[in-house]
Image (cartoon, rainbow, N blue to C red; front, side, top):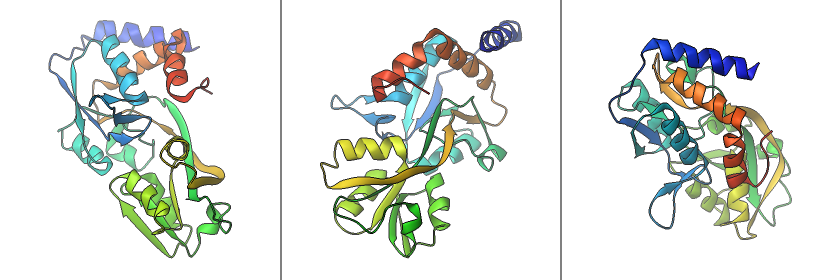
Amino acid sequence: MKKNLVLILAVFLMFSGTSFAEKLNVGTDTAFVPFEYKGPDGKYTGFDIDLWAEIAKRINVEYELRPMDFNGLIPGLTTGNLDVALAAIFIKSEREKSIDFSHPYFRAGLMTMVPANNTDIRSPADLEGKVVAVKLGTATVEYVESLNPKKIVKFPNIDQAYLEVVTGGADAAMHDTPNVLYYIKTAGEGRVKAVGADVKAAQYGIAFPMGSKLRKPVNVALLEMMEDGTYAELYRKWFGTDPE
């Protein structure tokens, strides 16, 4: 079925005359390890960066990365300043009112992180009456609000939210599971831990301005990569396991 869908979309594009002569502006939040971040050599790297590089090669487009805060990505698309955005963006019905998404390319939920010596918080339900650090403009904010915390501390950069927990300014932080686990394993250095199961599992998608002609060729490339094993190779490179 997947092969047939790839073939149908490829044929459609062949006869549609779609072309992209200008260099694309690709927005990304480069403070989200291991999806997008600046490496020691000063170059941007990560799962999303590699994924888009492969897609761009397959659809034959040139592009320039436009680093920015996460909460600037969707406005950048709606105003036409960005042609594409990818930064582990959850596909949400509210967002689909103003932008388009590619097929889902990654499943992730939200994970709670607390100090390593904390014994009071065992799950998101225990965040009631607590101070919780989150990243501004993300799907996490709405979910944490529903938990009736004492206070939500919002930061433009998720590393600042994590540091707030490490330094005792917040009881917990909540963010996308892959990023939380990566931080605990690396910069967390035994000072923090994850508690409970991840919640609100959803899918990431590549985002476009509404009605963008890029959406169909990008979807074709994504499906081809999933079919020929390229996606699995990238997944193993960055997460050390096979994709679901």
